[in-house]
Image (tube, rainbow, N blue to C red; front, side, top):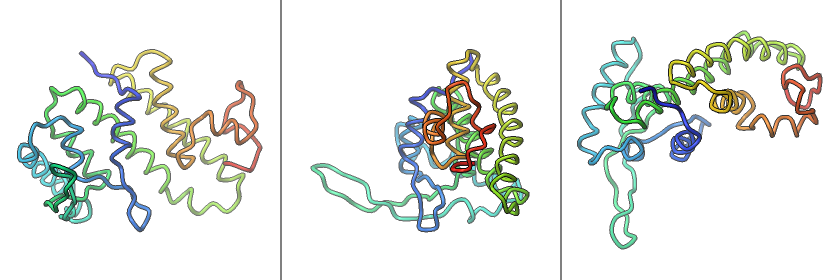
Length: 209
């Protein structure tokens, strides 16, 4: 049975996302293990080690994606204490969910979530986009990339069992959030003053790309 990426699952993974002082997204192992429904943190540690090995085998530096840190957790009666944790990049999370227990529904949803996150980041970091100087060039580039992205997104949606328009809209809207700084399709339409029937990236309104 295929698993759908639900709005609830997206919300769960978003709720534990952090932003560091350099503006980079990261997650921590102490928050991720609970979302992935492991009964104890020690049972999650082997998954992290497998992910580190996969990172190394892919030619990436482990230290670029897995950083040992101390994290404060809440204990009984509102107290806190420091515990060992790992600061995880988006790619590290992707490798973790790929190596986590596949029988867990939330793990399957996490695989789709982080795959989409990774693709969005690739689009944002493309050199071809960054060297563009005018708003019009950026708008046209984003339109072409988003069309390609949506084609890939549709394939991922199909593989994940997302087969109706309502569920696919979740994927598409999440793509817009990545490209427009967290704004949803509804937000973008309102900001641009577009009609419901108008396509976001076909607009000539330069207030947003």
